[in-house]
Length: 63
Image 1 (tube, rainbow, N blue to C red):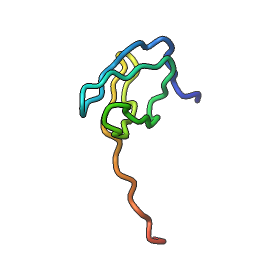
Image 2 (image 1 turned 120 degrees about the vertical axis):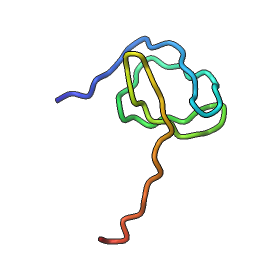
Image 3 (image 1 turned 135 degrees about the horizontal axis):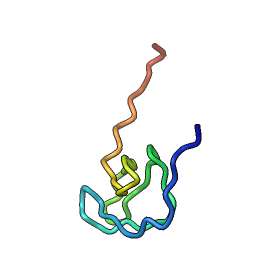
C-alpha cells in the first residue's frame, strides 16, 4: 500500500507557535520542523492538512 500524498497544500499553522508552515508534498506520519519555534511536528491528516507535536522517541534499552 502506497503512503497517501497531498500536493499543493498551501499554508498551515504550527500547533505550538502558530507560525505558518508551507509546503506542497507531505505524507501522514512524516515529521517536519517548524521554522518558527523548531518544534518537531508530525503530519496527522492530509485533507485538511493537520500537524501535531511529534511524540518523543523512547530508548529501547535492549529489551
